[in-house]
Image (cartoon, rainbow, N blue to C red; front, side, top):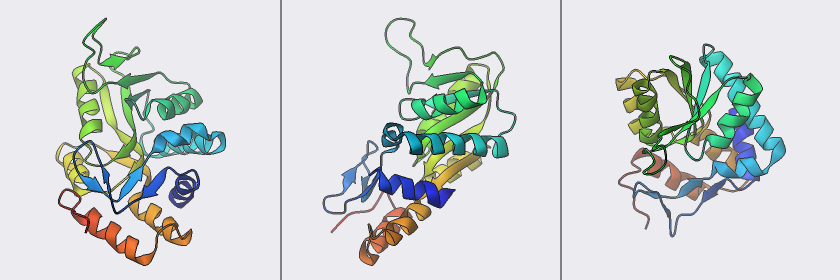
Length: 208
C-alpha cells in the first residue's frame, strides 16, 4: 500500500524535488522536497484509494475510533471522506481559536468523551498534529493518536510522540517516495544522496 500511494503521489505531481533553489517551509527549514497532498483531492480515483487506505489503517491500528479530528486545513477533505465511509462524526481543529464569531478552535460538534483520532495529511516535526491532540484532550475527548497520509520520518516527530505516549501510524513515508522516485526516474542517484543527507539533519541542511 505504501509504495502504491507513493506512486500515486508522483503521478499527480504531489511530490516535487527541487535542490537549487530549495523550497522553504513555514518552519523556516530549507527542503529539497515538497509534498502537496491537497492535490489528491483533485484526482477522484486516487482520492478514493487514499480514503480507503485511511479507513483500513484506522481499523487496524485504531479500531476503537468513534470520531475523526482533522488538522486544518490540509487534512480536512481526507478526514471527511474517511469519516463518511465509517459513518462516524468528524471535526476539524484550527492552529488557534478564531478571533471573531464563536471564537472556536474545534469546528463541528465533538461528542463528549469521544475516542477521537487525529488525521493529518503529512507529518514533519509533528508539532501541528500534536497541538491538535492536546486540544482534543483539553476539550474532554479521548485522543487515540495520530494517523497521517505521509510521514517524513524525522526524529523530531518520533521523539515528540514517544515522549508523550502518542500512538502514530501513516500510510506512506519518505523512503517509499524516494524508492518510487528512483523507479520512475524522477530522482537520479545524485538527488537521492542529497535527499538522504537532508533527511538526516533537515534543520541544518544547506544546498550548495
